[in-house]
Image 1 (spheres, rainbow, N blue to C red):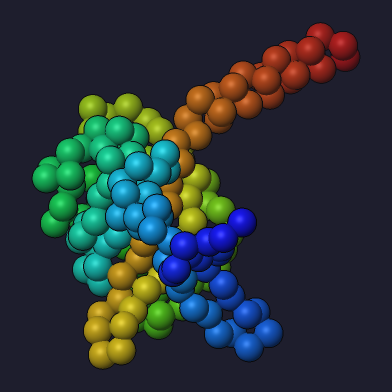
Image 2 (cartoon, rainbow, N blue to C red):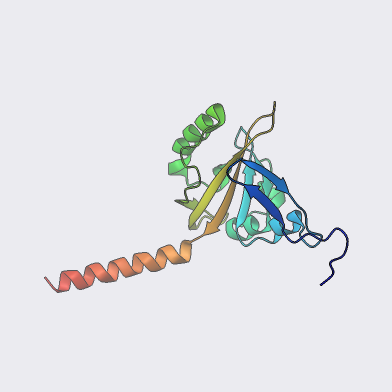
Length: 165
């Protein structure tokens, strides 16, 4: 099959051995559209913890509109009891440029705008450009339903084990 001039078979290539990468664009792939349409929340915060990016999924999961979230701190989604610990770790990561979590999936409680508890899973990516301050970008999934189902199963299992003693 003849391919039109400029046709690209791959969206991207990465040579792990050399650590060299090249972004190859595809005329149908729009990164901005992808980020906005993603099912997972994508949230970016600056060195001070102020939210600088909040996609549509973040609006759906946490209940805050983009306008309500931008320039606020991450405290709007962090339960009160965890804010101090989060702040200490956040400052350390921003100062050192190192996160101990790497590509690990973190699972923590969060809070919706209306106050109800959420269970979220997320990964973080530390970003910076030469001579500029750092950003942290989190890709967040709401796992509240899964967590509640697992808790219910654990409770049922504990009850069955207790009944068999």
